[in-house]
Length: 535
Image (tube, rainbow, N blue to C red; front, top):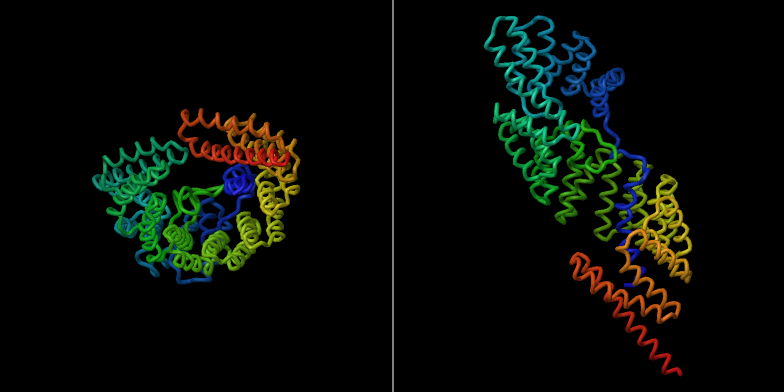
């Protein structure tokens, strides 16, 4: 492999990690959220007219969906339309007599209306059905309201018991708020205080798992989720969070098992709280802690786990499910295309990349991946066109120009690559870019410009000296300046001997430099022999 090819391979791999972290790339949704998910978001953000319109549409489209009636009832509760609230919640319970939220909300209605017997019955039912759930710590309000009712009824002991239960949810709230502002040790401290009061409290163990996962303590998080499941075995959501931890730990089969449990439960909404550092949302530019995690998201995550295990057919099957149920899910289509391409089917992968771009024309990754696939098929013009589109979408992002420059370099269009590298350098001076441009200058025999770039790269980062010495030697060889080449190679060997004792971590780079030194000396010796023979 030539030095130029080596550089190209390295920098193309590094491009995204280096440049798109600066990028002004417009954030793009992983998918278009369903009408129900949009309605939940409107409720959460108190956008009442929008929430009402969407929820009424949902109920009209699916009149036998208990969840939709319950959320419409919640809307009526929030806007103080109590008679409509009762009607919707009662209908929800008729459709599903185990729907926790419907009992929580309706108990509030009955207490407000002074119908204590019915309110107490609903509160008791809510307590019996309660489990860790995607929406809220709903029993907090139930205990708070029931304690007031008990006090009014003169039931002092019952009121005291509910206030003690309410205290644990106040601790959860304080811990949750500490987590929101990044005070994770304080959040753990609060949770552990609550566990001293009630070591069997599933919500406390669950939130403890969330905080440990946020601290990258995934094994501790798994242990916490195990305890949460012990005390709340009906909570499907916990499997989602535990599966995500297993995936982070590289335990792909365990992750698949947990995701399969979630899929088999079949709940449309899997999780809603504490999700910004999980699954598909972990690497999003803009994240919201209250964001819908759907069944499609879990299929996507299981596909990722299957792919990591080399079970590519199973991965593609899961991604087919996602694509069939949500044609806007461009990231699922991109991932499917990547897997298809890894199976040696570049033509088929391009079809999926194209579908992803049609689903979301702002999907930068879709254009980049399709361009790379085109390059592998030798369709250079199509690849350049896609990289050009990335530049149009992000004209102020140096990474966009670096991508196209790398493509130009790959196909031997060095002058065009130099133009793009120069544009990127004008936006962000980086030693890596100077090294790349220097190699392009060398390829078109603009040696003085190449040497200037190499000198600048060393000025920015002295650790580049080994690579720069190798490239300078190559340039001097091509110019026929054998003595200068010899000096650079001897300097490279000297650097190698010094660094190998200082830092074992540089061993691989130094060994590469030594290889260039040996090859270079051999080349110089051969060149000298040819000159001697000619004379």
